[in-house]
Each structure stands twice: as C-alpha cells, then as structure tokens.
Image (cartoon, helix red, strand yellow):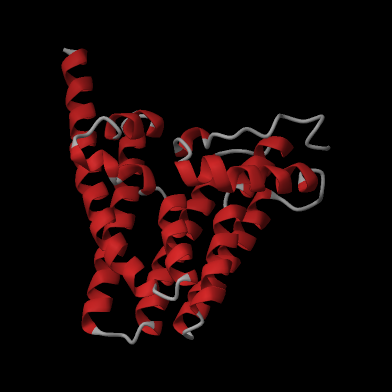
Length: 228
C-alpha cells in the first residue's frame, strides 16, 4: 500500500492534540516528505517510534559527552521523525491507542534523558540538576494532566485551545509543546549554550503545568455544570 492510495497523511496529531508552530511550519513538512516515501515499506509505525526514540537518546548521549552541536542535530532529527510514526500509522491503517501509548512512553523517556544529558554535559552543577528536575517535572506533569483529562472525556485539542486563551502565559504556551521544547534545545545546542535550555524549560514547563491544571479544572467544572 502506498501513501498515495491509502488514507491521506494528515498534518494534525488527532487525539494527541494540535501541532505547535515548530511542527506545523518546520517539522511537519519534513516528516510528510519522509512518510510519503516510506508508508508502503514494511516498516511499521512502532518501528518509526523506535527510530525517533533512538535519535533522541543518541542526542542525549552527545550532550552528556559535551558534543552540543551533534546533540542538537540528533535531537532535531528525533523531533522530525516523531511525526513520521503517526503519519505512517494513518497511511497504513494501523493507527490506534496502543501505538499512541507506546509513542507517549518513548517520548517522555527521551525528554527526561535529554535533560539529564544536558545537565551532565554542562558540568553537573547542583543548579543544573535542579533546573533539569524542574523541567522534567513540568513536562511529565503536564503530560499526565492531559492524559487524565482525556480519560475524563476532554479532548486534547480542546485543552490546548483553552490554554491558548490564557492571559500573559499564552506567550509561552505555543512553544511549550514537544516540538517547541526540542527546537529550543536544538537552537541553544547549536549555539553551544545548551545549559540555557535547562533554565528556559524549567520556567516554561512549570508555567505550562500550572496553566494546564487551571485549564483542566475549568473545563471539568464547566462539564459538571452543564450536566446539572
């Protein structure tokens, strides 16, 4: 089955939510290009999840070995390939919750590993590890909240749209998705300043976590009121 005669390769992430600006304008055109050429190959979406994960983990290792530019390129490669699995799954007609769960687990594992790699490669100062821990807490916590809201029947896309209506925080939220986080690591890695990414992500991910909890409670309270 080829990409041309199967389900079209779409740009949105379905139940995962909406693409962020980096994914929409940079990563997604690249991943679509790749997906259109590999969808008819005997490589499953889970395989592509593993390939993206491997690239991200190699990037984390490069950062730990104080090779920030190599780490940046590998992390961005993993970020682009992270879109291929879903596109291939839809093209092959294999998209489903099992693959989404597998991808989610790999993504969060890679996210934490990259932060740890940067902290270690940056010298392993106490402040670096604290920033990495704070960033990891915000990233994983926001993901847990989103999944909990989905379990309560709140669509991820609705959560993200409501978040975008926040006050001053909305300036930080568009780059708070995985595409934006990894792109900031890529840029600062190429500039040989990856430690700055730890402090940026510590602030940004914490703001996102707080806003996601507030948004989630507001949406759930609204649903409860509508049910009365």
